[in-house]
Length: 233
Image 1: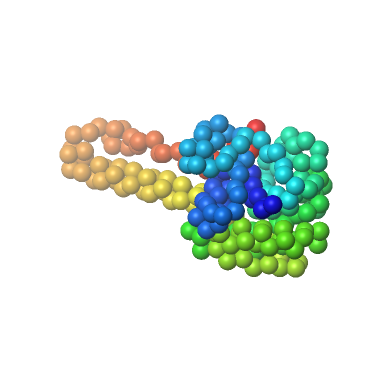
Image 2: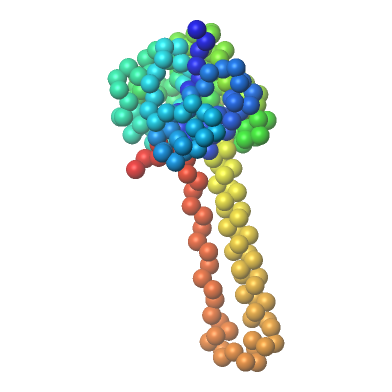
């Protein structure tokens, strides 16, 4: 029986992995777990097998793509033994395998840190697998991660911290930077427009002094990108 790849969380990072898998590994069974009704509908409309709750199959290679701050709440909502017979592949920054094993009861854990270029399937992902992960599961986890670029397998989990620093948080961080850049452009254009009005001859001759100093309220900074339905409430 062919092993299934499951992606838990269809936020920014999860979506990158899902689309990479569909594009580059169409022969591997894929299921996406996403509790958000809106995202669930969109996934199904795109022809993806999507469910609101994870039901494990023995031998699953399960990619956990939720925000690190949502891990405790996510773990509390899982039935005992959910991850006992699966290989858990975490792409969460800064969460060691020991914590994942303790919180989720997962004896077979892989940690991975993709970088920003994975958004266009040209990334470099650093991967570490615990000794309990079988060669077959390790190979499928690595194959899944190659759907978004190249993979560097390391034997020392501490190197994942260096990879996290270099990756800058991966695609989620890129999305934040893009939102901030758009906000900065809007702010710059608004300030430039206000400066042009202040210098115009008509404004200087006809507007009362207090009106010349009136400024349009600045745009609010952008909200952080939605990481998916597993965000901690």
